[in-house]
Length: 162
Image (cartoon, rainbow, N blue to C red):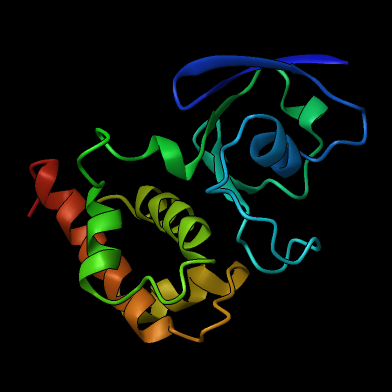
C-alpha cells in the first residue's frame, strides 16, 4: 500500500506492506537511521519519535497508521547541518551520550518532556519519572538526567525565559 507523510518538514511517500512497522519504514526505506530498533517490545524507547508533536514509540505503530501524519525524527531537531539543538548540545556537554544507542530516543523523549512541562523547572525526580519508558544499556542515567535538566534550561533561555 502507498503511504504519504511529512517527516522533518519534507514530504515522503513509499510503498509498504501492511505489516511494516513505522520504525522499519523510517530506517530501512527512508534511511533515517537515528531511529533505532531496540527491543521490539516498546520497552526501551530507542525508537522514540514525535508524531503531530507528541512522542511515540515507532515500533508500536504500523507505517500505514502514520499515513498523512507529521513526524519528527532525531534528524529533524537540529536547526542546521552544522548546529546542534540545545538538547543535543546538553547531551554532548553533560556526558549523556554514553554508547549512543539510546541517545536519539532519549533526546526525543526529553524534548517532549520539556514541552509537557513548559514554563516549569524540571527537577531530577520529574526527569527520572518521565524517563521511565526509555532504557540506557550503559546505565548512564546520571549524565542523561543532568543533560536533560541543562537542555531544558538552555531551551528556556533561547526562547526568552529565565
